[in-house]
Figure 1 (spheres, rainbow, N blue to C red):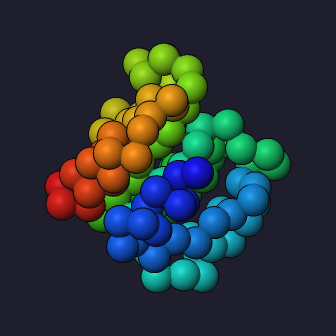
Figure 2: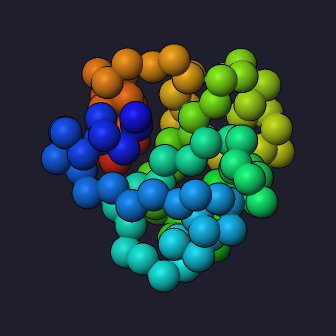
Figure 3: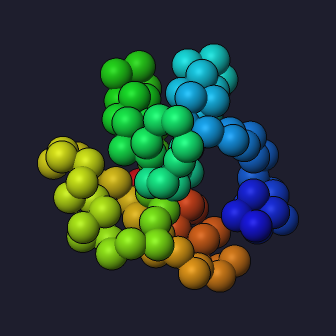
Length: 104
């Protein structure tokens, strides 16, 4: 659903089916932003969110979760600011959140 929303807004979307796939994509691809679910199979979204910071410190990262925003971000154990979108979002909320994260 999210990739369809973003694609309809003109974003080029690459999907990963697991945390391991997402980590490989971060290492191999030129990304303009990362949109990461905190709950991912294999490697957690928390680990995936931290990985790009070593190689791509300015990469905009948007976290998504069905859990409470503050609890979700607190689980990252970092002071770094991540953009966050609460699940059960609509198309406009998603596009607005991703666009704001990219623009800074």
